Image: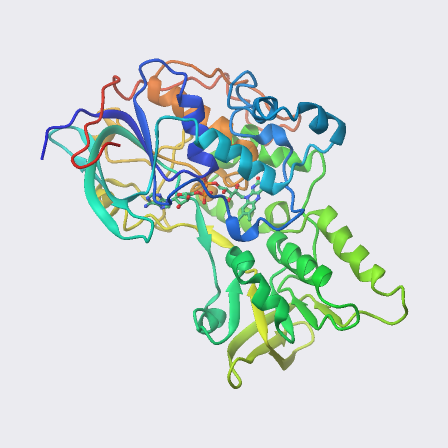
Length: 470
Ligand SMILES: Cc1cc2nc3c(=O)[nH]c(=O)nc-3n(C[C@H](O)[C@H](O)[C@H](O)COP(=O)(O)OP(=O)(O)OC[C@H]3O[C@@H](n4cnc5c(N)ncnc54)[C@H](O)[C@@H]3O)c2cc1C
């Protein structure tokens, strides 16, 4: 084992959140940062890059623009580099295609020198003697096998490990059986041909991905013989809240307000705001209705059932490749069974658990009444005094819904959160942030006078890898 010089910052995971951090960190002189990603290259929700699907936020919610529109890593600069500014200007579509956003992020990822793909982080530890974090990783080959092990030493860690597909307990028996066409929406495109070819298809879940999958299936099944069911647990195929003032829930002002609320209040509030983040974008609802209507033109109704208010109680196999879903409509007090040939589980995503990654940090992590990590207003885990006193920190991106509210996974907060982290890590203010971001005054307390960056987490020195060369 060679001796190592510590980095200022090691990022774990390279999705949009840590890619934004890497992009904003890149021009900062003396800041020594490296970002580790387990996948072989940048990949953003590949199973849901359905043709025509658009971002739910305008392009200004790119990796950098909402804090630094002059950054070379902006979406507009990407368009300039690709000589596509004029066509984009005339398209007048601020909500860009999802595939286009992925292409833009890939363009940035291919140009930032601090990114290391094929590096899976297994553990983050605190070394009290060196007063540094140790980040253990494995270098992963194309088949997912670990080729070599390494360790990085760093003053700060930023976890940006994102979300993972969620399947409710009742539906778990269906997953992974090769003989049945059942997949999570996250893997939809990989299974699309098989699902499209099935006799009868059921989509479970009425969030945005459920709507997009249903629309794609509807558009590609034969008219009059669609044989499609779309089941929603929610009371309606509800639109996402997208009013101008409603959108102010996705501002730093609201996140500050939410963060200052008591824990039980936050826990009650977040699920009550489901329509801010769980509904369907109105354009997708309109496209579904339009496609259904178009199919009535020859006369008759499409062979489609859309039913909200339905819960799947249990699920199992009938024979061979058929699936049986046991359904319940609580309002009616009715139960029934549905036999189907393929199921797409559009049952959402959950924050990826970090317990195993942080196991050895556990004694230092301060937790709330529900056992979740406490996270301060600068996205730092609240750690025991022993670590906190050193100025070192573990930051999280997109794992703070319980402390910061609905905006945690929103791409519109990505650049702001990255800038907040960089301001705190450097102890200077490379990215001055506005004091006010919303017309709404959330709560009755006085607005904070300023957002002052915290003390610097340490100087800039190089990380020496044990095995490879992160
Ligand atoms: C289909 C879909 C569409 C969305 N569209 C929008 C939208 O239009 N607007 C919006 O505001 N929000 C949207 N979101 C929500 C959110 O912005 C995205 O989920 C976004 O990808 C979050 O970025 P992230 O970097 O936090 O996580 P991710 O994109 O999930 O990236 C996390 C990365 O960390 C890596 N990783 C995990 N563990 C490790 C480890 N131990 N070692 C190394 N690497 C690791 C993963 O491989 C992954 O690449 C969408 C979400 C989904 C699922």
